[in-house]
Amino acid sequence: SLRLLARITALHAAVLRPEVAGAAADSIHRQHADLLAADHRRWDLELDMAPPDATRALVQRFIEERPAHLMRHLAGHTGRALRTVRLEAPEARTGTLRMEDLALPPGRHEVRCLAGVPVRLEAVPAPGHEFAGWKGIDAEGPAVTVDLARARSARPVFRAVVP
Image (cartoon, rainbow, N blue to C red):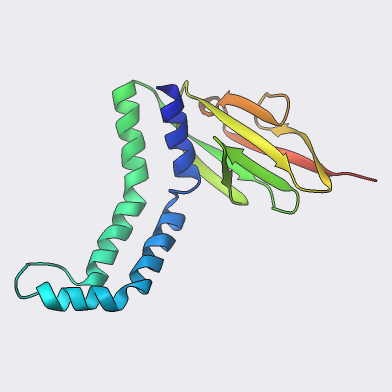
């Protein structure tokens, strides 16, 4: 369904970004390093298994390669063109850019998307700011549904509220 494809796109742009997933894997590896080493010592003579650091490197490579592979797979099986669009999330002091209800961290994001899949974007102003419009997409209002594949970039614009 289109909703599933939109959600996968948003997950890759937000929580499944390689730097986020990689940091989580690093944290788990560090937190359980002693247990991983003990487990490796326990099973090393009975099983052909890589040491924990080598396994961590394999997980990191998987985290880095999987999003592109999955999006190519979805494009091929849905017959939809795969595009890359740049989303620019504002500094937290001015507001938040949400994609399918997931907040994108401040900064530029190269997002892979499928043509013809509507994605919900929402610009949420921070206290003391208001939504002023969109750059890069032809849309009105802070909450919009757009086909990102038709844009090269998109960003919400906020302005300070003058009392």
